[in-house]
Length: 115
Image (cartoon, rainbow, N blue to C red):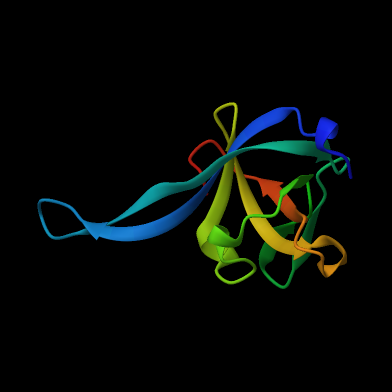
């Protein structure tokens, strides 16, 4: 992985829960980092039916420079990436070669409502 491959600007966000004026829980997203990244499509989206649930597989692989402030890989379910207005949910994260230089996210693009 080379730094010149990181030509896309992304935001890495974390979900938190707050209360609205009526005391109802509301999900809010806080940007943890705005950084350059390499985004590679993983091919066609495929869906599988397992039991009564439809599960989708990997749609993107996103790599960026390591940032200790992200606290990875803990809490991936509560994190997402925003790229050009698109919401991309993080399935998993791994640190390449355990050298704390690059983080690779396996992702799936979300629907328009962010789910």
